[in-house]
Length: 161
Length: 162
Image: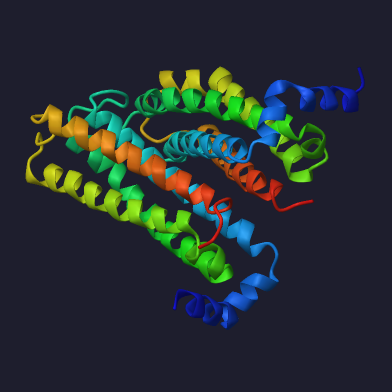
């Protein structure tokens, strides 16, 4: 079924146009990486703040309030450029085990980020009062984001299903 | 030793041989390279956008710089080392690759822009009591941002050009 969807998608005018313009894929990938830069840097700084290291700031909440808004914009750009890349090469992405893993990790990372944000909203000092929980959340979050970026790069190398 | 001789010597080193012969070593180092570059560009963009007065207006420029610079330098070292390892695996090929050469040139330009900013603009920025950055600081930020965006684009293009 996914194969049928891929061949249908690759016949659409949008996909055809992207395939015919040789610059479209590296351009979309560049935009994608630049937005990854914003998301990854914000998340890494937030995680290190949860680990009580790196970028200072009086509380986790203040660091989060500073870093999370730009992340939302970048995530929107990421989603759009990601969809463009799928339209341009449906089989390369949708039939790649690395892509499946990337999406699964993304789902987990999004859930975890929601948990971090919930804590911040609940109480200004929520995470500062729970060092063990903060450390665990930060370590898992860091591993997930590193995993997402890695899985993304390995789409180019892992054989398709 | 001529340049081509130097490149074939590089390609013959144990590390270069290892990278080019292994199926997983090149993508692994490349992944590390991407992770490092993403942090270099993200942390530099924070400073650049602050200098352009577009984000974190309520924070002092020196605080934003102090937060970002350890990330920038730490990840830059990783990016440079992993980039060098990727380069030597196919040194002669990369040397003839247009986007690769432009990327190196822009890296020099980025370094020059940063050196000029820290030598000339930044010290005066600290002594002046003003909330919004002066024009020369905004220009330094904009130049740096454009250079780094181009470096990422050129890096991506290396793989698309024969």
